[in-house]
Image (cartoon, rainbow, N blue to C red; front, side, top):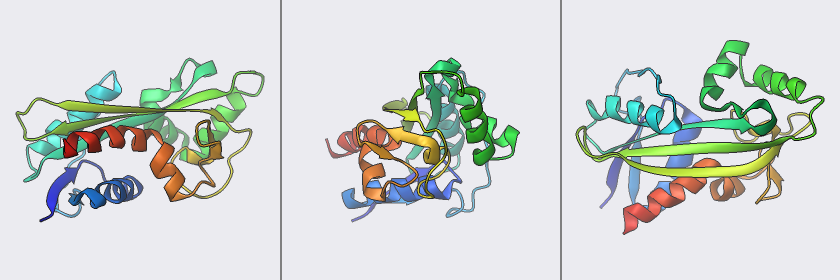
Length: 195
C-alpha cells in the first residue's frame, strides 16, 4: 500500500527530486497543483528552518496528507555567505538565475576564495499542530568561473561539488540524488521514515 505525502512547492524540478527519492520507499508525493491548492505563503523567516516551517505550516492547514517543505540556498563564503537565505529572491530581482550567477561570478572576480555551500532544510509536519521535525543537508563545493551544462536547475550550472568531484550543471541525476544538499537532507528524512 502506498503512503502519501504533500510537498509544499510549485517547483517541478524539486518535485521530481522528491518523487525519485521517496518512491522506492513506497511514498506518493503530491504537489499543490495535484490537489488544486493555490497558496503562496510568505517566506519571512530569518533562517532556512523558519522559512521551511512557515511553508509547511501554511500548507498543513489545507493538506489531507502529512506535509514536507524545504528552504534552500547557495552560500558563497567570500561574499559573506550571500545570497544564502535569499537565493531565489536574489535571482528573481535580477531577472533570473543566469543573471544571478553572472552577478555572483562578477563579484568574485578578484577574490581567491571561490568556496560555496548549497544548504537545504526540510521541515516535516505530520499534521497542522504537530511538532515540526527538521532534516538538514549541506553540500560543499566552489563557484565555477562560468556556468556549464544544462542539467539540474537554479544555481546548479555554476556549482562544483567537492564530494562528487562533479559540476552540477553536467552531473547525472544519479550523482545529484547522491550528493546534493537536498539529497543529503532527504537521506536523513528517509531514515526517519523507515525507523
